[in-house]
Image (tube, rainbow, N blue to C red; front, side):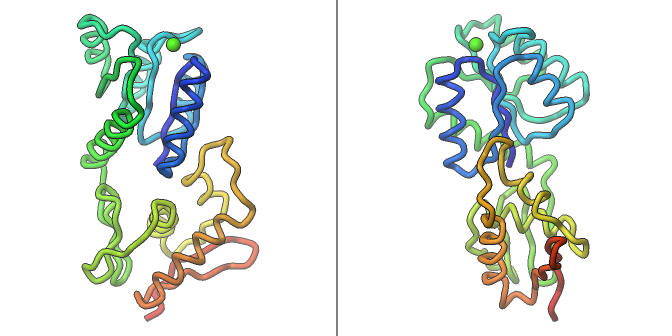
Length: 222
Ligand code: CA
């Protein structure tokens, strides 16, 4: 799950980034509207948290351009003054939810979860590989109908492998799905997730094969 935070107050941006990363989201953060517009035009996110008062381009304009390009990514708008006029304008431009400052992090996180769920109920799908199914909207994997106990990152690895089953997936592709740009990706973090996932899938008849120097391949072992 990738989230873009667009916020020019460094303390708030930092606090949001840290708390969402603790919940295992891949978080990128930008501090002005022009950079946000550029990033949103070239990358895709599962959620955008957008401040309205921003240098260069304001949040309304960033939102207008995002929707104009046809993006349906959920957008949570942060407003300094919660006026009816702000909300009407935001809704007209395609905002999905509003939160007025100051707010509690717990409330922000609850709204983030709700928006991501809602965003996926339209685009979510059921991936299948042998006895294994992955519900991308419900964020869970099932083995012969029984839920598998996977962490958010293990689930992220499995999702990428299932989306590309039968093709080799390299570590960079996995890291891109799991981490924000400036997050330290430990040299062997991906290997650790793959290792754990491989163990949990051992009995499932699903094998993650390591292709030396290239990456990983999801196969059926029986
Ligand atoms: Ca601001």
